[in-house]
Image 1 (tube, one colour):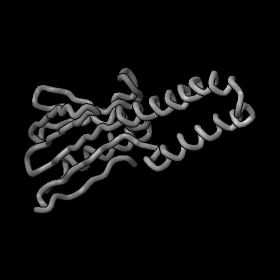
Image 2: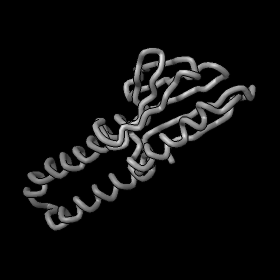
Image 3: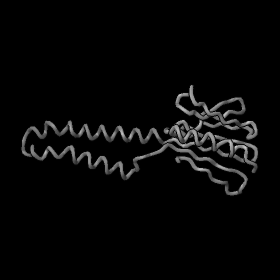
Amino acid sequence: MPYEWTSSDTGNGQTLTLWPHQSLPPRGFVLFIGVTAAMISLPLFALLGSVLLWALLPFLAMAVGGIWYAIHRNRESARILEVLTLDADTARLVRTGPRGLTQEWDCNRYWARVTLHAKGGPVPNYVTLSGNGREVEIGAFLSEEERLTLSQDLPRHIRAEL
């Protein structure tokens, strides 16, 4: 699961950390680009010493560069972190987006409500937290099954006595 519950150091609170799933680690990214470049350049060996090599080389380099750019942009846009902190009387959600922009929401823990929107949200099994006059999404980047599990897990932790 790309989320984790931890207890605070003082023992009077809990923290939920959520992040998007990254199926391609940095080492795998480098390996994939290297193998792709090698496989694309393999047919060029037959053209060594010919003028045609220089005609094809920029297009093959653009193909590898385009693949690198697309995967890199995808990895950068998935740099999202959501941290829900539950202390004795407050629930606080801080979302850090891919560009470093942070958004915050907090309310009295007693009034915090978890809602699962099975249909009608931007994604199936859309999970929201409401309280203090606002409703905010949580874990929209999780898979459908993970959001369902999160919606069952959150109320237990919010209602738990500290």
